[in-house]
Length: 509
Image 1 (cartoon, rainbow, N blue to C red):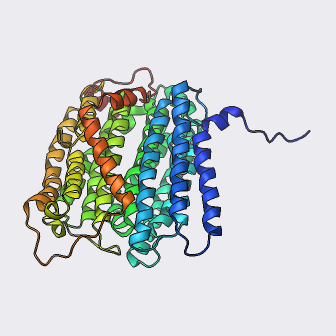
Image 2 (image 1 turned 60 degrees about the horizontal axis):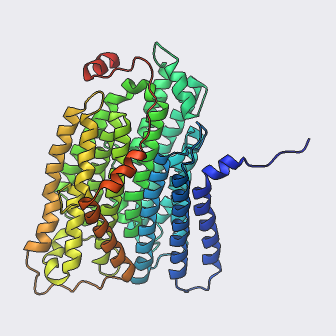
């Protein structure tokens, strides 16, 4: 009997955007290798951006057609298309920054564009995976490429140190995740999220100890990937040591993919045992918000400050997960889009003002920036205020936090205390976001200060584009709000899941 090697058409349709990015990455890798040594990497960068735009077009076409599918291994729903779009936007902006970085600072291999696309393809697979085996595969495809990108500047000892730390701790956390997958499979007999949810819902006494331990191990693995405290210790060193374009890529796209998978696995697969992970995730969110913001207050190194800011925002996004509702998933999509624009924009300004090779930049070096580079200062102020969640001047950053608060307060088990903590820690974050603005606008420029370098064209386009989008969508957020609400994720629940805080506490005992 002949062996059937055909691939179902439905699977090809489900993976079409991913296949475009993967195929484009491999084609560009071969093209980059065959190009003459010393040739400009700009054509490869343009090709990489073109691949991302083609994938975005495929996503838009499938979303407009309303193509959906049943509970297969790959999700075909609006939540996946929305998170894929956020990932690709972050990838496009990072590729543009990487091209300028290689021209002005330390040379970056042309292969970095192909590696960025390969990492993006792993992120897209991770965001759409409805099977724990595919979750693991997506994490590995993403992580291996990002490890290389973190240390791709082979002339920098700090870059090599960042890559080594990220690799060792990343492998350690992936082991936790994989052991968790094995235990969940042993307890439920399935790796498909829908089947896991059904198996857990069909056990009225509650999940066994094997399933609970597996759930805990998977929670640790995901907490590392999203840089939640106390699993965040790698973040400042890796973000500070990696080349700035890839730091922006890790802070935006990697975080978006990790949160998308985190939400899908726990809301679809472990929704019936919400009471088992609610309290743990509640404390993770609270601890991450507090530690991220408090430690960021003491930072004067700009990249480390933004790293701790990223940790704090992971805490805010965890609030959406704690709600376990469609509104929480929609708020997460909206927040990830705003966060991606503000974070990549902020790192773009850091790169634009760097003098030559990578080195730690102190906030005080930007004294009087408004007097010499007013547009850069205004753009950075927009990014800082967006991350703070300031109305009007912060653009859609304000609405991002507003919708998170609404999702927390309107949940079946209202997360009032967590919402209050989110507001308090956001006020604390003003201490370092407004400090950057104060230095740029209110401190005089020293007479003997070295002039800032000119901003390359693509970097300038990224900065202007991100700032304009943030402000425009802050004035008219309705299209993005509708898009986010149509991209929500439906959690799987079981009969008898408590709906009040008191019931949650009683059932968890």
